[in-house]
Image (cartoon, rainbow over all chains, first blue to last red; front, side):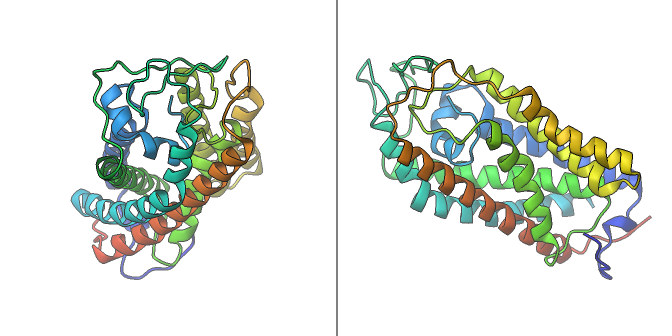
Length: 60
Length: 236
């Protein structure tokens, strides 16, 4: 993961910017993943049933 | 800045989710449908109910009135939708990991990020909780979900320690962290008795993991491409 990309530099962002963006992305992503793969709601479970099995998360 | 990263994650997640859904509908869903034949249906309700008679299996009967998509087009459409959401969700989580690490992600190194995601979210958890088909016995759902998350977090933390820190002691701690959930052990049912044929279960395990490996590689490369496409400015 050591690349010297000239036009984009995440490493060049301030730590505060990186952490803020990271926290927001992590919260959004975890919330969506929870709904699709972990929520115990029967309706969500039934809708995403095949995907839950296919992506190898505990389903039933 | 934030919206650019989120946009990149949404684009990459949709691409990888669509690839995953295609492979899933082609190679994985048929195995799930084949396994459902072996799932006991005591109430003779919808073909999609999950009543299980196997000893040790968790009882999970759906009330007759609970909505479920109709088999066929509707069910496939929901599979596609849920795979796209799954793709965006993992893309956001991978973006967060990139941000926390402070390392760049590009189309060139994206496959490494993808493989790390596969290790964290699929390979490590399935080493304890192998991919489940309907009708297979399993321990308590909440216990398994807790172990799954604990394993993903420990594996991610372990990889971060190994990759991002210099001292050998911290790298060793990272290796220990990765091993820890497997030393503790995943929750298992009292009995492994199952009507599902072993060959079907093996076929499913191989195909679901292959599908997720492909998903993560496509996701890593797509995210690297999309992040650069959106030209995040280095303003500090």
